[in-house]
Image (cartoon, chains in turn cyan, red):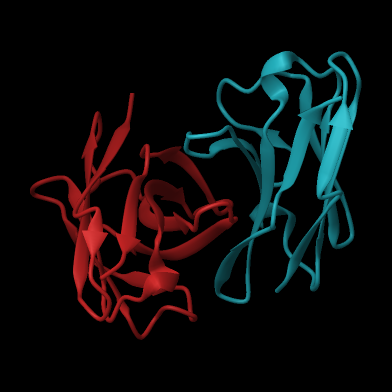
Length: 107
Length: 121
């Protein structure tokens, strides 16, 4: 299963709304869809699992949704610490796959 | 709070076999029904799942690496390990260990800080 994230880079200002997308090439159960945030020099951090469940300690401004083979991470109002690279991840076909990443940068 | 720490050689010569170890603290890797995973990231690139091991020793591997990878678990020392055979420059990456929840979903909720492995002669 191939995961395609879009856009590759997203340039926004603090306070704006960010919408990051991930498309799977085949159907994947909602249970097996997740999102991670990675800042330079750090390990990834789990944000969302089962498509729309926030991980422990993740602020409410982060939310997840899905439609068919597409799933979306939304950050309602960007804080300065949200600018990072975001990866989607699925489990399907006996394989765990990450998307290529979306870089969220300050405009 | 669960903590994971990778250890192992930072420089490896091409064609060699090398191992990395992940030491877990703040919880027992033999309980809780979790898997334990290795994930890598080549410089400037995305994330690649290598494989996962359960407390019983059952393993699942990325098919693209399966012939060169072995993941094992040592519950008595609260550690799990990755062995990679016949390494090449393409294996140069930061290697992360992580706790893998694989029940009611599939995701990695605790990560080590990562260790850079460089393959070079």
